Length: 252
Image 1: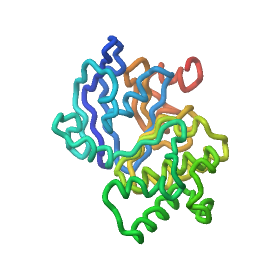
Image 2 (image 1 turned 45 degrees about the vertical axis):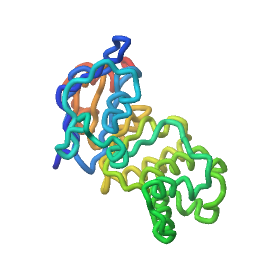
Image 3 (image 1 turned 90 degrees about the vertical axis):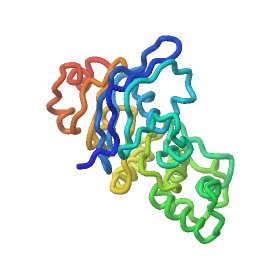
């Protein structure tokens, strides 16, 4: 198993003095689903956003440590952040389709990247929608507004929009928190297939989802990563008592 991401002694402090993350060390394997669990405010979303440098847009006072993706230091000030964000896609908790057609939502990124060949655009849109398990539902109405889709379909459209750019890593921040159980199951099914091609890091909206889809789990508490192991170990043989207490519902 090869490490896709290595985080060493990573800390991040916001300008108001809040230390969102403290001395995080983790090796994240490629082509697996790694879930970040823990109570709200524990640093999961901040940790997720270090990989595509979205924290650059926040009021951050200090960042320390190393974050390597394929042995490249992504915190390097000289790094091309636009290229990094193309390599690392993100899907947020609420569906955020563009005010365009279903087709244009998926083709937009490809066109911005310079693709003008209509056949290649068509193929890219179809392939991305298929990977997001949405193609069969929308292939007859690609030029309807994206807003005509249900919430679950819109979220899968956002996933397809990310996949169209063929990233290497997919970040998901509570991607099913606003969805019903049927839509949630479709997203989870997509992710289980996609890990064969992508490295996936997800902050699920509950621990049960982590248990269903994750290969590895990291437990965060008050900005510290308490434990990282296989999903089986975390749920059945946690090393730290705090992990056991959280998994068993003693706090959350």
